[in-house]
Every structure is written in structure tokens, then in C-alpha cells.
Length: 256
Image (cartoon, rainbow, N blue to C red; front, side, top):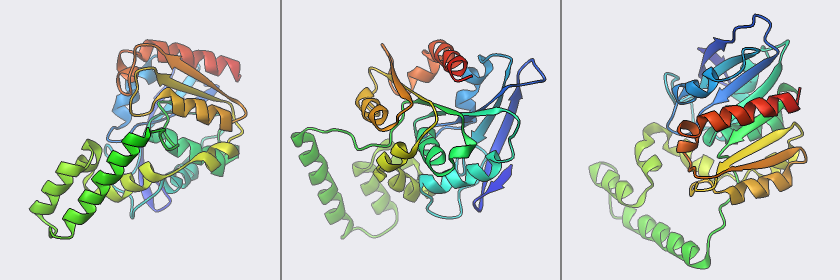
């Protein structure tokens, strides 16, 4: 466990076969996950890499952050530790929520990363139809009205379960963090990214559709979009792990 920004990050190191690793891969998981979800991918990487798999504060074995952190707080905490990883190229490999942290990290601490490989990256408001926006607004109004008459306790929890997403219902003490994360617009952070970036999406991902990747690519001068056929938000890490590993290996060769 390492400290950063007043929080604690669990770091798990996995070395390749070579004692002289040229690249440090820093793996950051998605919301509600941990480093374990990225272990199969890390194990498939070349022997010339060294992997550092993170449990970000509040996930896996890492205790929650000391407050309602935004992704910038997570990035600053990681930066304190990552500054001590020297002598190798440092590449951020992330899924979903970990991509939000990576965008902030590359924007706020540009000297710490030599590249990013982002899988199912969010960070920009989704494009919704007029009808979808109207339904969402009506649902939010209904929840805000209903909670005026429901005190905190089991009844309020049932109300959240009725109106909230599955992530929100399961977030517990991290609900303020989740609310901050999903409402952040990281377009300014993306514009500040200068390192090479690969953005990977499944064409069936409804949570973070490839449209977000197209818009992020337009904001980052050294980025490119990869769309994988037949995968969604989560199975891109499992069923698609061999293709992801191949794409990541190619990316590392390109930025060498």
C-alpha cells in the first residue's frame, strides 16, 4: 500500500521474464472492479514489460479516499507514487473509470506518462436523442420530488434503488465519488494530453459507445481510435483479451 494525496493505493507488481524491463505498464481498473480484472491481460504482455496493477482508493483492498474525490484527486494521488517509477517508459493502461483518471493524469502531470492505452474510455457527455434527454430529465425531477417526502433510512434506500443505476445502488460510501465522475466533462483535460494515445472500444458498447472515442480522438493530437467488432463494455476485457493484448503490444512497438 502506498500513500498519495491523502489516500492509499494498493500496488501489485508483476515482472516479466527479463530483469531489464524497458516499459512499466500501469494498469487502472474500471468502476466497481479491482486489479484482479486486469490480471489476465497483464499476464499476456511481453517479457520486456513490468506491470504495476493498481487498486485505486475505495476499490479492491484499498481503503476509500478521505473525501468526495474527483478524478483529478485520483490522478494527483497516483502521480505522487508514479514519480518514483523511473528508468523505464511509463504507459497507462486502463478500462472505463481508470481512463478518466488517466486523462487527468496525462493532462496534469505530462512528464509522468509516455503513452496511454485506454479501453472503453468515458469522459465526454453521451449524445442522446431529444426523447432520451426528456425522459432522463423527467426521471431526475421525479426522484428529486420524491426524496423531499422520504427521510434517510431504508425508505430512502428503496427510492434510490428504484431511480438509481446499478453502479449508484452498489456504490455505498463512494456514491459522491461516482456522481462527480459521471458528471465530469473531461474535454479540457483531453485537449491538454500530448502523449501518444490508443482508444479502444467495442462496437456493441452501450455504456461508452465508440462515438465518445471519435470525439476524444479529435481532441488529442497524438491519438487513434480502434473499434473492435462484437464486443461490449465488459466482455472486451474477457472474451476480447487476446485481441486487446495484441493491440497493446503493437502500440508499445509504435511508441518505442
